[in-house]
Length: 415
Image (cartoon, rainbow, N blue to C red):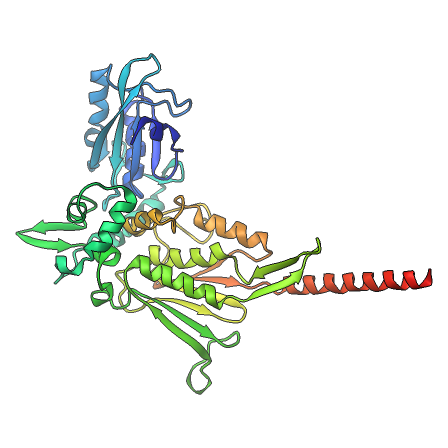
């Protein structure tokens, strides 16, 4: 990063700025919060309120204290990568800003006072006992993304696709170097290559060879009920496979072809075309299902069920981490942070945690209700319900408008 980029980034789920004068025990809080959530970067040497560039070069003792924070003030130790960014400080001197890059951890980290924090938006939230227990439970699930896939080797990876991805992110080394040096995609243990689940799902030539139900299935029903047997009312049944990017792209594109459009005369005299469900909302419910599904559940796939009055998306696994039905609009936790980060590069994931809130706003804007979440221990189900009131309102307006024209004509005749 350049100093201009560091200054431009807003504090958010994966980024924070801190003054060089911060106390070590206070710096431990965002470091712990990032490790317990999606990872992130702390920029040290910039005032977090005024963005004044202080730098870190002119107080070596202070700098050394801050560098020891991940070891001395975090339990267990948090792994960080250090980067220095050249800058000119507010006194006009050549200086450096320190970047601490923190990876998401498979462990739950606390400070010296045995307090646990987690990054939520642009804040480091202290967890209550129940939340801490929930996080400990979910860390066990998170491990699956990094779990090696047995019987795999380099031939299972689509290196041409990796090349396209690293070109997208501006990575200057080779595809193999990227996989070996980043996010534990490929490791070696006892002389044997180990390929992670995330690597197969994101870059595999045929992920379904190892994860047969890691796929998206679209089912279109006639009517408003799901019937079976002799009354089965399935009229379309399409399965989307491949790597995660291909699955999402194909599923979103196909769902677009199934959406009805309605054209009517607007109040300004121009024709208006509306779709049953907003484009972003349709995409987001698929992206969320693929990003946050529990891939350790191998017996079922993601299902998009379309009825005359609703779309229902079923994803294996319960809501991750601290996310609940009553806080889902503003609380974020990635069960699969590597998958979420990958999709952010392709703009399927926007800013962390904004997706559900934006869905609600877009639905509200067209008179539809918020998504409805239904949960059990094995799956999360999202309902998008069509609003029939809009059609009635439009019809009433057209009738009133038509009457107005008739009255005008009658008046003209009388005159």
